[in-house]
Image (spheres, rainbow, N blue to C red):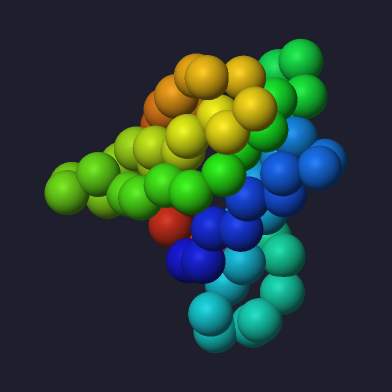
Length: 66
């Protein structure tokens, strides 16, 4: 999976490498400003900085298909 932070939209797109298509779009509650981030070592949590809101987003996910 490829995770793309849509800063102006307040969401994160999940893209399948296999199909090269967006398979999920996660919206940040209240809009937010997801920016740079990384996946945890166990692959279960996506961590993103909130560039304009001085917060950190932790998105726990189970999506493995695509």
